[in-house]
Length: 301
Ligand code: ATR
Image (cartoon, rainbow, N blue to C red; front, side, top):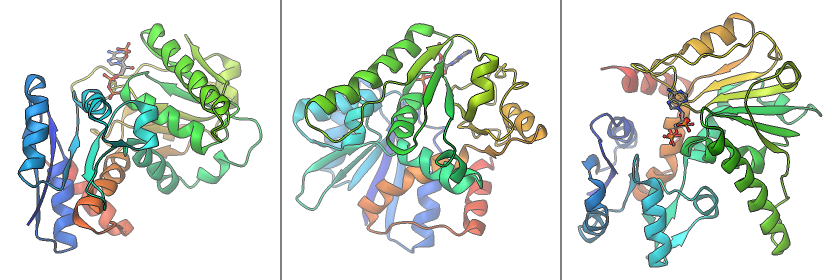
């Protein structure tokens, strides 16, 4: 029986057990995946306990992603380049050499969902002049900005956040990050077209080809996201990582004016695949019917 799980605090709301339960059943694997409540003060002990008890690995959710990354750094575990960039880990597994590895699959989840969830995805990498707007500057925004820099050729990425200092910090971090790597001989291309903004001006809106909400606004029991899409380029993809409700008012407004939209549930689903493959040995694939079925299961009470 292969054991895995997710650690977080609080954890009762986590959809990951349902998600991995669906995949375990689909592939008929004798395995378990449980939600494990871990208070911040018990993080190290619980981390060690799970590995001692033979867990193949686990996911990490709020509020532990940054702390687990720091722990992995301190202890000299293997850290993937993505986790290193984002400075947060959401997946732990043991590799072929029996080493403990810390990685971050949120970036993959975000991108795979964009790639699969939008018919207009190709446009993102074909039009010459285009920019992206990221709403929010927290952990999710960090993983997403990294991904956009690594995978898409945006002329400009704008970050808009309630707390401007955080948007500035994130923008500066990625400029410096890629420049530093270039100087040290890495092949990464420097990305110095990232900017914190206080409002979406007409010029910015007109040139946008992707707008992503990474804040918790629009989520059930949270205030609505208040944003005026009036000048947004009609072909811009509007992507909300909030998945409860699946169709947020941002997405409804975008859809009603003809913009392509991407819902957030796929990001949750696809971020789970890396851990599942590492722990249980099968790379998940879902047909569109299975994706719809799983979405229904995840969003049912
Ligand atoms: P996550 O890991 O999901 O990104 P986070 O790191 O706590 O979570 O980030 C939450 C994001 O939502 C932040 O950008 C936050 O803005 P601040 O940096 O100003 O805190 C944003 N957010 C949360 N509640 C908000 C609200 N009521 N109005 C505006 N932005 C909000």
